[in-house]
Image (tube, rainbow over all chains, first blue to last red; front, top):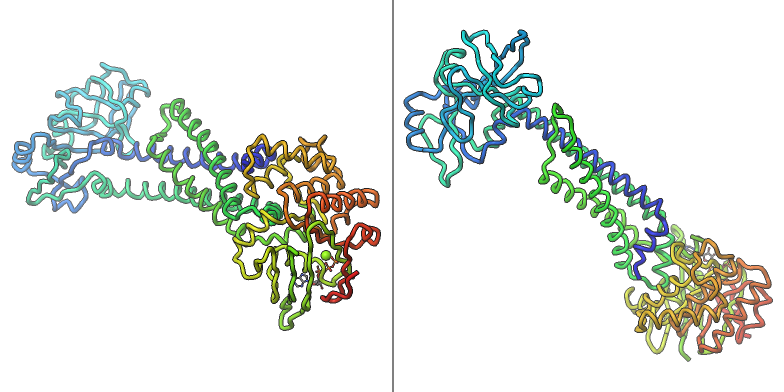
Length: 344
Length: 226
Ligand SMILES: Nc1ncnc2c1ncn2[C@@H]1O[C@H](COP(=O)(O)OP(=O)(O)OP(=O)(O)O)[C@@H](O)[C@H]1O
Ligand SMILES: [Mg+2]
């Protein structure tokens, strides 16, 4: 007979409260991690969205890409040897629109490639968020270091760097603004072997992200928040299961007295725990997925299925461990105690 | 003879001092006979009953059931015997709060690994519930039953799996005198018809008329057999 199910049916309120705790805590964790992911996307989406590969910067730059200047000759050599390679630069700067309003952007320029937008002289391609701010195709934008005008040619989705919109410009225009046509970085998409070049340090995507100190520290505090939440929710789970089990000590004693196996009691508890956690998680996943659809466009929110699945598995494991740890008392319940304690 | 308590001793450690609660008890239970255990409070009746039922270990002595010694078995073996061969009724009914009357009994059949199909199990439940006159409350939950009704369900649960030995510790203590008599009549009737060896602890002089044997305990020893 399915005692686990019968009990849940009879004590709906109790199990609903437990379920709502699991639901609220997991929803909170999903939302926070969505926001953290969103922030990290705004912080380095430009890099994070690149395929797996290798980044190269000069050794003299000492892991600070903005100090890196790849010699034009070396760049030419690498690009001719690796046909998918691309050299690019990132520089923070400002754009003024027709009303003189200034916006912070990340100027990006690159040699022709699949990964980065390539634009002609005098043209500019912007992140989608700029369109939401009221800039239209054909608008003319200016920069204090640039004599001419940039004509907006189009928009690309999800291109953010250091919390600013990315603005793709041509190499010539880049040289006019920043006074150099030496690129900072070379990126080669993964192709089996990792080529090495003298005088150049190579970094995987994650390694490269970690050289960006602002990104790294930001990411550290966000991850801290998420894991803190996970730990807190783990404790909450364990405490709740513990309280439920304490309440049921008398019942466990009686069941043991009439001959129910201890392992059966554990199975009852696990069944209930898995049932509640799965339902609560499903609702939380459903709601957080809805939120990703309807979240305001300006809000940095990005919750991938991968993250959701990862967190869900963590929650299931935490629930299981919490229930089992708190259930260890079942093992030590003496049938006698329950009988002598009177009515349950 | 199917159940023999042989020189059973029990002592509890109370800090430095060890208190001997049972000082070598000998007792024999027979099929179809109701044995009543009486004695002053604290004389060790419940202790003896729970040890006999395998709910706690003895310090010394043997419990022989069908030729096997319970005191030398491991916990799982004792649990199996409890589930299959013993029935218990306590002062309180101790029903499972979230199961209906019918489900309480089905659970017991489940625990005793009944070979019956679920339809036959339900028939068996109906039969036993008729016996304790609770068939009309088959679908009720314990919270909606009176004390006497709960106790009758507890008795039904204690016998549904056809145990060979029935242990009852003051099963009528929470009932009024009319209900107590009904419950005792029932237990004594079941002892005879199902051929169970019954050991029952009672405080109530009135209930002794149902007993085949009366055993008086005092200070951890058996005083006299009547
Ligand atoms: N777990 C225990 N630890 C220590 N002493 C105990 C324990 N259980 C029982 N005792 C003691 O053993 C003695 C006998 O207890 P028991 O419950 O067997 O008495 P009883 O004859 O059933 O009394 P009553 O009629 O009041 O139910 C009592 O003095 C009690 O205090
Ligand atoms: Mg007692």
